[in-house]
Structure formats: C-alpha cells, structure tokens
Length: 379
Image (cartoon, rainbow, N blue to C red):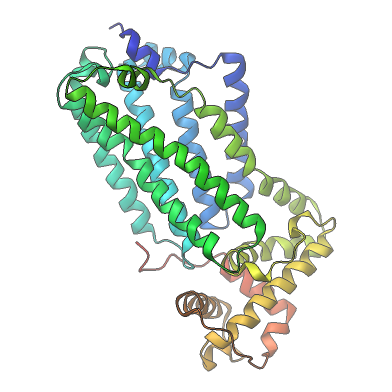
C-alpha cells in the first residue's frame, strides 16, 4: 500500500543520511556507555532509558529503517509512525519519572514505574484504534476529517506537556531554593526555556487536531500538519552528549588501579545524591574535574561528612548511635533528608559520633546507599 505524500512528510526524517547517521551513532554510543558505566543511581538509569526511547523514535523516522521494516514485516508506514509516537510517549513518561527520582530522597518504587508505563501502553492501544482508518488507507491521521485527529493528538501530544509541567515545577523549586549553586540555577533556566519550546510544539499539535476535526483549514493547520520535526535528532544527540561526561569519569575511575579510585567509585552515588539534596556542601571547584583520584576522594569524603554532620540533628538518638548497620544507617539518612526538606528548620549542633569520622565505615555506608531498595509512598 502506497503512503500519501503528507504521511511520508510527517513520518520520515528530512535529515540527510550523512547528517543523521553520525548523530544516531553518537546517541547509541552514549546509551551503551551509560548502561555499562553509569547505572548505580535510579536517576542515571532513567536518563539512559530516556535516551533509548529517543533513539527508537529517531531510528523509526529514518528512511532506511522504514524500508527495512516494510520489506521484512507486515508493517506499513502508518504503523511505523504510530510506533514512533509510542516511543516519544514512553520518553515523556520517563521524563516524569526522572523528575520524581530527582525531587524525592527515596528511590521511586517499581510499582510506580510500572504504572506510568502501563498507562502509556493503554494510551498507545487507544491511538492504534483511533488511527485504524487512516492506517488502513495509508494516510496520516491529519487527513481524516472527523473526531479522530482531535482525539489522537489530545492523547499523543498531552504526554510531553504533562511531563514538562513536572519539570518546570522542579526547576522553579531549584531557582527558589536558597542552597542552589549558580551552576544548578543556570541549568534550571536552560531546561525551563527548552521545555517551554517543546511544550509549545506539543500544545500546537493538540490545537491543530481540534481545528482539523472541526473542518478548519488555514495557514496554521497547514504549517502544523506539514512540520517534520527535523531538529529532534540533533537536539536529542546534544542532550546525550551533555549527559555523557559521567561515562568518562567512570572509565577513568575504573582504569586507575589504586585505592583512591576504588573509593571514588563507591562514594560517587551517595555523594551525588547528597550534593543534589544539599548543594551548599559542594565547593566551587567541580569535584569530578580534579586531576587525581586522591584529590577526588578527599573532596568527596569532606562533602559527604559535612552533609551527614548537618543531618545528625534530624536523626533520632538511636540512629546516631554506634553499631547501627550500614543499611539501617542509610534509612536513617534518608529519613533525615526528608525531615530537613519538609521542615526547613536550621540544623542544631550535635556531637560528632565516631562512625562519622571512620573512613572505612563511610565507605560501607556509601556501598549500602547504592543498593537501597525502592520504597513505598512515592507514586
């Protein structure tokens, strides 16, 4: 079945192969690198999943992949476009989960993750039913003139604005938070600006769907219906490059066969979480940029100890006591972080316990931190 010109325009990337193939390769390499080297924290795992869904959407828009699927499977170009939209929706769901993982001290439980993805599966099934007449005719959903374009675009294009609303709320909290360092505030502003552009893109899709269903044809509907999202792959690859630096840090740490490098690898997940929750503990110089593993270990230990010392006053006396196992200590630290976030009260001086100045015990706590189970209450 031949596809209509509008479907070909909508479903296929306009980037030439000489431009798209290197971008796809970079995106794939970053995903592999993060899977192998950056997987301890839940937030890091979700970032990798987001890149994976973006890669799926980008590859499905490539002419060579579409030709391969059409020749080897019963799929049509309309079906491939539906799969592309499904990948984008899974990406939006992952962004929502990333915000939850960033905003909460505890790990997002698996049931919450499964629930988000299950909702998207149901929505994709609904899109398949709504678009069935268009797919049977080899046409784009925008070429139908009934209720279907409005319903399709409402379901498909609402996912990203919902996720971006959660992102915007998190960024605003960062900007209003007195502890946020300048670098974090700059990133929050950049994310807000790029998120606003993406939200505008998806909201105009919804408006276009309703206008088409109402029989309105004008310059806006033509522009919106014929847009090709040519910048999607370059933007996705730029985002991948931005989150690729932890890969090189992890490789450098693993290649160095010395005790300090091993300690850095153990401390890294807890240090990242404490730095995100308590940015004031971080010094101006980026720790990961320090030249030697000895310097990085020393800086991480200082910042972790400073954070834990501030949290002591939020812990119960029995949680501050000696002899508590590392897993229970991590639970106490998590409770203290939540109490500090919720109450906002100033830390009160507390006598420093021996375990906080024990270098080996700090490593045991950091090791247990990266193995924390997902906990309830964070849907």
